[in-house]
Image 1: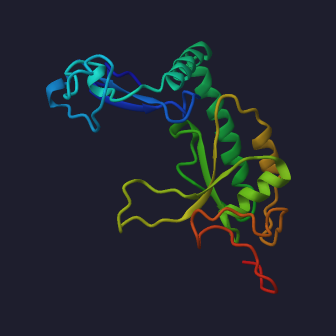
Image 2 (image 1 turned 180 degrees about the vertical axis):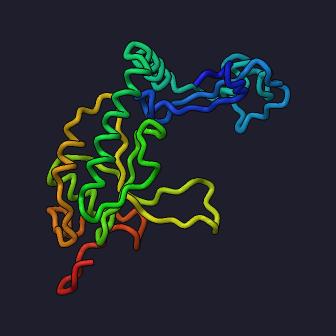
Image 3 (image 1 turned 135 degrees about the vertical axis):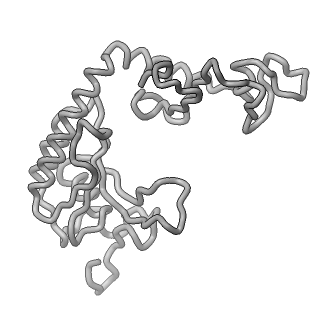
Length: 225
């Protein structure tokens, strides 16, 4: 992404995604064409530069940085930026595409698996979402974790803000990244889903962040969900 070539005036980014750094870090790129007088801070507080005034400073970056800065987190963010530059964005992207292509093509060959998206790794991010017929995504994630040591996310994936028009449904997903080797994709493609699978944590340890959508452990004497 080229901020100047694409004439982007405001660009917000997070540090724990493609910059591989601490959660809770990020930034806002403010272009030269932006009229600072029209920017209204979401929160106001001490900045350390004009603490004697109750009003927020009218100059950058202080006007957009209320309160005490997360210095440790920002140091980590800066290290992440340097690391990405050293590895080169093109090399990182090529690795992500290789992993995503391998996973998308392989998952489609496993009976009962539905892969979502355009199915072209070059045209999407390195996130692969899928479901298995007859299995809750939470059970899919637990089975992959316990049998193969592969960490797959699961739960509701929907745009924000939610509206009544959105149909919410849970999915399992992999977020592939540069440090990741081919091992998780290799073991995942050897995996065989089992709707009746009962793992070590299927006795009441399953997470219930979305009641009714995630795997619910079998009640005593009852049938498996």
